[in-house]
Amino acid sequence: MFSKTSFVFLILFLIVRNNNVIHAGSPIKTIVVLVMENRSFDHMIGWMKKLNPEINGVDGSEWNPLSTTDPKSQRFFFKNQAQFVDPDPGHSFQAIREQIFGSNDTSSDHPPMNGFAQQAFSMDPSLNMSHNVMNGFEPDMVAVYKTLVSEFAVFDRWFASVPSSTQPNRLYVHSGTSAGATSNIPAKLAKGYPQRTIFENLDDAGISFGIYYQNIPATLFYRNLRKIKYWGKFHPYGTSFKKDARDGKLPGYVVVEQRYTDTKSEPGNDDHPSHDVYQGQMFVKEVYETLRASPQWNETLFVITYDEHGGFYDHVPTPVRGVPSPDGIVGPEPFLFKFDRLGVRVPTIAVSPWIEKGTVVHGPNGSPFATSEFEHSSIPATVKKLFNLSAPFLTKRDAWAGTFEGIVQTRTTPRTDCPGSCYASFGPVFYCCTVAAQLLGKTSALVYFHYLFVLTCLFLTCILEQLPTPMKIRQGEANENAKLSEFQQELMQLAAVLKGDHVLTSFPDNIGKDMTVKEGKEYMEDAVKRFFDAGLQALKMGVDVEQIVQMKPSLTTRSPKTSTKTP
Ligand SMILES: *[C@@H]1O[C@H](CO)[C@@H](O)[C@H](O)[C@H]1NC(C)=O
Ligand SMILES: *[C@@H]1O[C@H](CO)[C@@H](O)[C@H](O)[C@H]1NC(C)=O
Ligand SMILES: *[C@@H]1O[C@H](CO)[C@@H](O)[C@H](O)[C@H]1NC(C)=O
Ligand SMILES: *[C@@H]1O[C@H](CO)[C@@H](O)[C@H](O)[C@H]1NC(C)=O
Ligand SMILES: *[C@@H]1O[C@H](CO)[C@@H](O)[C@H](O)[C@H]1NC(C)=O
Image (cartoon, rainbow, N blue to C red; front, side):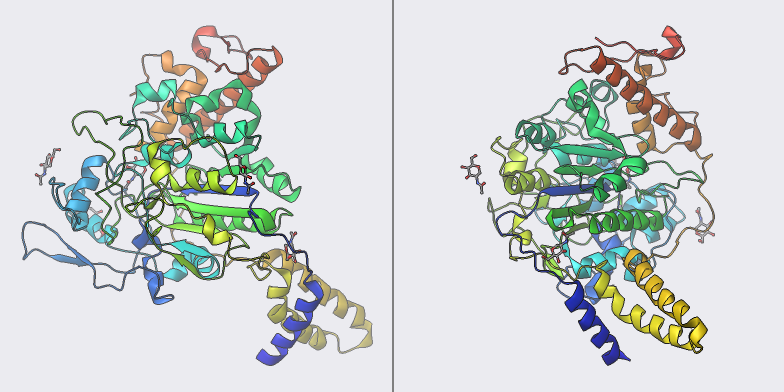
């Protein structure tokens, strides 16, 4: 059967292949960035070492003690039993310090990475969380990543930019700094973070960008993106992403944002515990398949990373020396963090037909600086290289971070064997369809049915046979009546600003406090709609496009439709 299959495969290969040669240089004209939530490298990818020994992953010999000060305490060996995780392990600045150093003493040059089980124990005395954080997924449980890692490039030395929680790390992705934030600071949030972003550098260079959001664009944490002139850069993912990709109209720099809320009809797909990793896998699969089918595929680079490790164990010591502060800003009391060490290693995968199959990228090999590492600022630094942006680096951090344009510059033509290529999956299915059709088509009356059947199979193969469909992990449905998580409350604070409710006394601490996930989702989506409606009105009224729409709460203005004012 195999030889026949290969034969059919070969014929189809010859038919389908065409010889458009795209010239070397920078073939990449569209960079797509997806930042998932809260999982370490070892937790998601570590066990793939057994599939490709070149990957710096795990083999089960890694362990953490229950107490770092008691050599006889219980040992938690790293397992491959990761499942649905609820609740969320610790990832505050203090929690991460304990995970990395095993104590509050940060003087160690080579952090032992031994405090994960201990820190989890401090949050959950049942030991369940200690077991959870010392666990990773079997590759088949994260089948989409398994395929992407074997087909494209995985980075096994990419760190969170800050040893802290989500927002500071997300800010680094597009601006190379968190402007001093080591956690979410509502006062800064209301104003929006002030730093310059890669979006403005792209815009100045005449390169388009677009943000495809679901509940709420977290990129609106950047103040500058709230300017009226960027109104047209935000698109609802559901109605626009597939369409723009199909029409070949994706902008040069694309950010896809996931659903940060978890409801029955629209489950969360950001991988944030307790959301089901299955939904995250389905989302990555959908984005990949959409790009793969786009006429822009041959000029696309798709980067998937994770904001931070989410409290899950990773065995690679986080870099603590030679990391430059991006802008000299010192973090708030009590830590007065100088932004001079990185966070825990996170999974990063790069996808492009210009990447050689099975690439494993380790560190940046002393470039551009001896201590350089890959971290989130590597994204704007690489964008600058690939798009030859003349604007200076955003901060000292992206000037220091390793860049990875090299992985798309080894070939002279794009690969044609990436998952989703019609001919690649034709082979086996074509063979099976032919056999089935012959069995069905014994009589001449069925001969047309026979051909129709084969053609339909081919067609469906092209459309459906793409990345594997992962296993569902969580049993049962989303708990949409749960309280909002800390992260969701941060998004609610952003939503409050977009809606004008930040002037109310409930802001920031009581916004969303008593809401369920379902109510929070509705609030956020309404806020985003109002904000963009107001932006459109301002644009129509000819307001200076450098202005930011200042929203007033609907409760105080009380006019039914246009309850918003612009400056
Ligand atoms: C991409 O390039 C390959 C090889 O040159 C070619 O076979 C394929 O048709 C191109 N795909 C698109 C979508 O342009
Ligand atoms: C570490 O510091 C925190 C305060 O930041 C304190 O609550 C905790 O007890 C300290 N832990 C150790 C192991 O000293
Ligand atoms: C710990 O896990 C066990 C087995 O899964 C479960 O029965 C128990 O309720 C959990 N305990 C807590 C405190 O979550
Ligand atoms: C996951 O992200 C949320 C959102 O910022 C954050 O509150 C939480 O601390 C993170 N979880 C972990 C384990 O880091
Ligand atoms: C990059 O931009 C510089 C000007 O900023 C220009 O001199 C150079 O030729 C450009 N390189 C490429 C490869 O386009």
